[in-house]
Image (cartoon, rainbow, N blue to C red; front, side, top):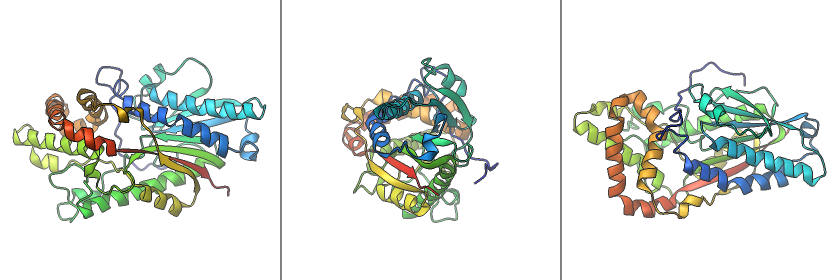
Length: 362
């Protein structure tokens, strides 16, 4: 699959390093990376074959972080990989090769802030790789270890059916799927299925045979069928309700809200297994849920509102303009406060999943 010039929708996190930036409001995503450290160590220890000619002959061990975003989180994730690979080499009494890390994200990502915060340790050579991961972004067979954390639930685009007033999947009055409206949910799943297949095919070209890939993403817990009954689903629903409040006040047009939908899909275990097996480029070596350190803490309204703003500000601004942001998130924070007791219960149903995949040899 050659690199494509097809335009991909981009949803960069809030850049810079100010109080409302993603860099300052991504502690939850940091917790995902911390929780996955043991997963990565175990994957490298048990599944990385250093006798594989695609690996043992390399002069540099190449790692790619797809959807790296901005801020320090990606560096913690990459350090986890470097440390695990070094430990593996030392366990067989070999000196590890040099490391090169490729940081990939959309061209609109704040790479300036990303590289200003790069650790000065000098344990690896760093390079930025702009472009959507829903296409090839690196040469064939050039990567030994791929990593993607909290990025694959972002779709390449909003499903067109839910924006079509003549479609049974038209999502009037809502900005996301709940799991109740079957046509809307199916449209989101079909888009996720297409995107995930493209992602896997692109990575299959870039990874060497026997190379590993670790995916970390939010999803539906086992046995849970309704996204609306999870904390993440409620966060999205309240954002939609906050936008409707602004429409009732005349601050924005209600038709504008009807045409706004979040390009996210939180897959189930079954969704992921089906897509990966149909793709047939990777074997599933390990699959499970992470014990997120913040899952056991009380629900924090202000921190949650700030994190949602850092994630959603760009996409909201693109559709509605920046003038509504402060008012929107004042309403949103109030709604989070009013639903505090519900969130304390439902947020516990959220699920952070990990997958360890191995590139099948040709």
